[in-house]
Length: 338
Image (cartoon, rainbow, N blue to C red):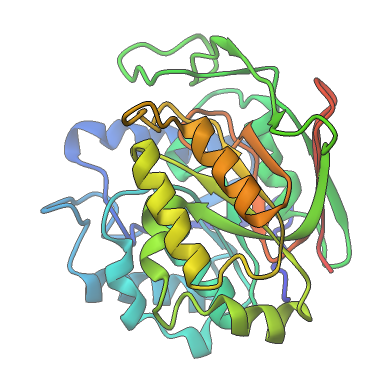
């Protein structure tokens, strides 16, 4: 594995939209986020794709890929944060120059994890699943969101720890924002395990948004077996998933497809982020899904962690050695960049 490094000050953040751009009525979010990073001694370069949106994409796939390729290869840009996710990031994959991608951080979640997953699996370059650019627009950042800076500033060989949040947000409300902070943190966080005797799991992190990375199964961008041999010395994978909109049965089908494709052949555990999705279908609930795959795979399954669409969320590094420990308010994630 190869790990990027982002220093603390004087860095330039590139903002490009490989999936969805920001419609005009939300452009103020971009300006706020830019100001907040500048307040923290970071410069911001915003690409042309960011302020446009049509037919569920910021721009044609070739245009989106060209801008991402340019920012990746531009030595004056130190890390890349897309504005947010979307629907059609998979379109850019055939146009990315994987052979020339430098060791540079790309950070995001939701549909952005489609690109993160593909880059890590095809190149062995670590990528970061965490807050998107517009999530930076608060005057102050909660401790969980803030951790993205500590994670991206961890050198190769180093270890970084993140702890469970105290509270999380159950619903989005863009029309009303609390003082100083962006999120409406209104519910108590609790990381959970299906088996009280299984409170810890270790392995190499890999995962993302279930509804988007599932479409990489069977493609050149989802060759997990080769990645595991060539980049991870056949170490077990500690999988993590966030679910945005899928029903319980859709989550089940997606996981079963991954299982049948061999993605879980050598795994040490599965971690699910909390979600407002997972609609129960004919009495089959999201918790039933978790139980089903715990029995099928005979590995620890944790859920309701700080991952995904109910913020705040941790920053998880694809390819990093990690240990997740469930111990109440002292629950933690330790990552080592080895």
